Amino acid sequence: MLWDGGNNDLPFYVPDVHITVVDPHRPGHELTYFPGRVNLAMAGVIVINKIDTATPEGIEKVRASIRAVNPRAQVVDAASPIFVENAETIRGKRVLVVEDGPTLTHGEMTYGSGMVAARKFGAAEIVNPRPFVTGKIKKTFERYPNIGPLLPALGYGDEQVRDLEDTIRRVPCDLVIVATPVDLTRIITIDKPMLRVRYELQELGSPNLTDILKARLQWQ
Image (cartoon, rainbow, N blue to C red; front, side, top):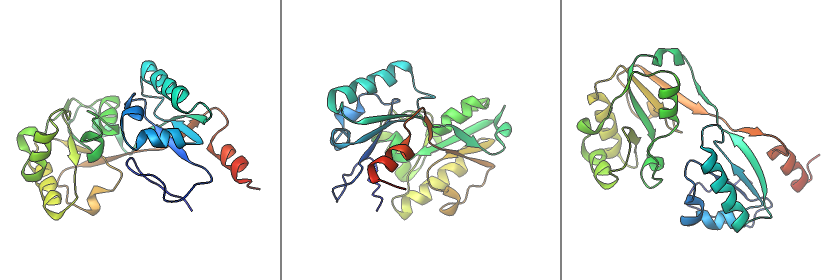
């Protein structure tokens, strides 16, 4: 059984292997959030992700947290390379970047993989959606004023979904970059050219997760 608890959960069962992922783009959050700190302390394996785009200072701060809270855990270093089909079409465009909602709201980030892709592939301008937001999305910006020039993808109810679709329709841009875990086109209609950003885990060095799981679970 694989239990994926996300960023706000604890396993309902005592696990054979407890893996916690920490984010050096948000150094210190691994200590100040609940139950994040509990997961950090309980983990048998800790993955330091996004090493390819985080600052050395952020990476070292996360390592220091691991040493302080859970020095017995095995640590796996990993990158999160991004992939965008037809990425060359981003260059020179005025783009609207749609990021994962919780990452920007209670996650306190001001950017995500969509912004990384926009900058990497040469967008001419990141269009700030604030003047065009409506309804529930507008209230989200009021509640979380430190969100960057991005649009958080919120869809916890029909009204939020409609407001998200309406906001995207109102933003004057050449291209929409969507960097959400779910395929937004399955939920809303995006009436502009769109590219989707995805990323994958790329483990660096050894042992990697496969080696660790084989040893801990005695796989053949």
